[in-house]
Amino acid sequence: MGATLEIRNLHVSIDGAPILKGVDLVLKQGETHALMGPNGSGKSTLAYALMGHPSYQVDAGQVIFNGADVLELEPDERSRMGIFLAFQYPVSVPGVTVANFLRSGINARRKAENPDDPGISIPEFRRLLKQKMDLLGIDHKFAGRYLNEGFSGGEKKRNEVLQLATLEPLIGILDETDSGLDIDALRIVAEGVNKLKGPGLGILVITHYKRMLEYLQPEYVHLMMDGRIVESGGPELAQTVEDHGYAPFFEKFGLEATEE
Image (cartoon, rainbow, N blue to C red; front, side):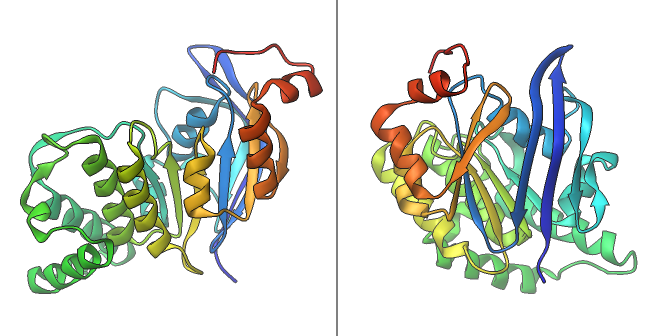
């Protein structure tokens, strides 16, 4: 049986303002889930809270992963357990190459599992990185560039997918990976994620748009509004949002419309 991430009645606030108001969600390794919703509904707040961003205050609830409540853990500990977050706006790290960043990440996880582990050797890491870059169709020169420094929007998002491929987490959270991408860049990024899908990886993709979901074809779609998941279903739910927008759901659940 694979790993399971279970979110139970999660309440989160920022500077005292409640954002998440009781989120429940179960994501299993090997499944692909999509989380949709209008701006301000709490989608990105959920992603950051799951990874332990210090600006997000957890007021109630649990997040159980492999039998442990990850809310008790630091962000690096959550990462080493196998939870990964692809950022909507990846930051640049001048002076640190993509290759060095990824090798450090691999070694941090290995050290956590075994303090005596000397880390992945440079030749072994080079073989691994080339394998992952070939899988995703990324030029090998990419590895020598400074992390996100001077990257286009598409390159930043492809770099997030390369991290996902190389670090091999159990659960990957993609926070609006399609944000700011043109059609071609979106297709390339989505194809990369599709190559990683399988029994070893559970994916939660957070998005506004059905186009990303047309590429990824999630089994489950969840609609978040006003800090709660108000409806869950299959791909047909995303199609309903595409056809009619969020207005019918605001009306259905008696919520005040927000800007989209």
